[in-house]
Length: 67
Image 1 (cartoon, rainbow, N blue to C red):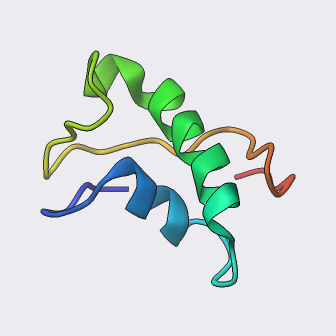
Image 2 (image 1 turned 135 degrees about the vertical axis):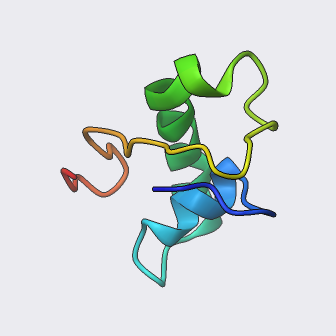
């Protein structure tokens, strides 16, 4: 998934959860996106660059879904 201007790990995680996902589910999921893409993102998860291509987490422990 390609990062767009204005994206955050929170917004990316939220887009990949069901529409009725709670804030708690998003809060539990965005760190999985960071861990999966830490090499690309670097030390600060608040700084993601538009155009970067992120890989989804292999397993979402919040919903049990496998991507």
